[in-house]
Image (cartoon, rainbow, N blue to C red):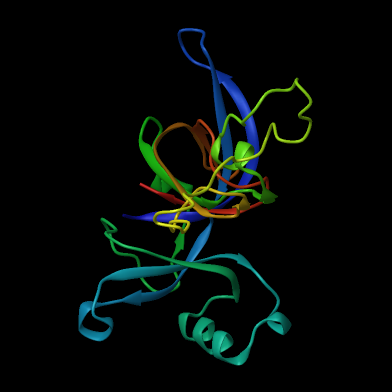
Length: 205
């Protein structure tokens, strides 16, 4: 699907025509530049590689510098590939938020907030075991039994336990585009998207 890279600005709310208050996420989408056009003959598949957010040349290694110089664009901080553009862009073209239309639907791919090491109640929604009375004081948020003793005498793989939570690649599908503000490169999308404010996201049509 065609799309662009963007930066999550934050959340707000807007009123619809019938007076409903709609929670929305504001994303700064583009402008993105085309850094490579891949073809079936040369690369085995059709795709367009785009870059987002310029960076200084001193922070760019020589292979990257050569790649961007071939495209005739400034070094870019983030790169991503998208497929199935209706009008395939050329090398060095600039893509803006005009790619999206109000009322359309998009998929947003981002990295969820990292929560660190968490227990089973927060990580998996366990209800906890035991009571808060009758002398017990430290077992309320414990996971309880994790396996049988006699047979099979092991803990099965994939058992929901405490561990690292968050910081995963998350895709939210079918979010409606409420507003497109091309003068500020902003996209107002209904609902929430993964990641913290300022994180990089992929917005696909």
